[in-house]
Length: 387
Image 1 (cartoon, rainbow, N blue to C red):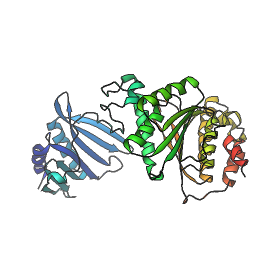
Image 2: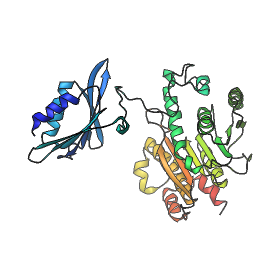
Image 3: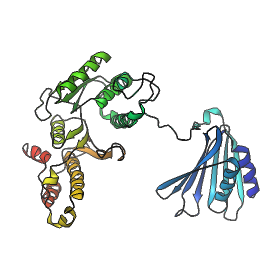
Image 4: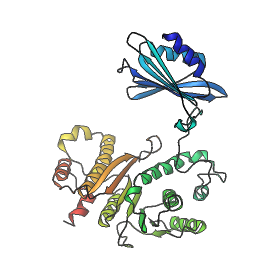
């Protein structure tokens, strides 16, 4: 078979019933790795969107039917050796040999074998945990959603942030015991968007037996949050006025959350979590000033002469050293991106999961690092008091 057979196949199956085309086995991997193609409806016109994987980039373009037929033929004319076309009823494989010989295999598939759903939206909707169109009472009261479940345009970033946080919570579910009541503390809860979201997700959606405590210094904020708690009848959610460093209200905590606790308040939250032997720690630090005022490494003087560079570097060092200390204390620790940088510069989340397999490390390497930087972090000082 030759290229005219490919054109015939493409004209037949490049319709609205197409699910996806994957073009692979590149002959020039340094230029392009693979291509994915799917149908989309744009202003009621059927188009075909290509996603070209070039290095670490993905380039998108839209084509009409006659254009995509020609484009696929171009791909298979020496650039790629294989194409897989999946429709609602057929799976077609096209193989092109080095000599240009074309082999086409066409398999009829049953509905039960179709594992990929068709999506004709031009910009695919992300599958959020809390879904748009389904009203969530606390999101309505916090002016993130309308009563109909639509996202308030000016609050869409907050909606994304809430769902991103819940994805982190979802990831650590295997570390939480579902057979007993779990105590969760949110230090510096503020207006409690994420506290309410966490309670709703774990209690209402996942049926965990939880007792959640939100702690904040602002009396009016605590009053408002408790009023909302009463309205939703969230009987295992309580908001208290208090300070992270001095809070002694419980003896054991399973999960500690600290979101945007300012400067060294984050260190006290992490210290408390470790002392409680918490199974999970989720922390988004804020306003990391401490190391910026301490760093004196002579070898880095030429870099740190630029105030902005020193400030940003100090913030990253602060969080890296915090993560190191959690590792030393027996936590498997990751530093993850919370939300995209364009929405907020406070986009790092430290996630620690206690694990018996994660043996405690000694302080030697850590202490060499802080000596080089000329710093003495608060979290390190707190742990030194226990040694």
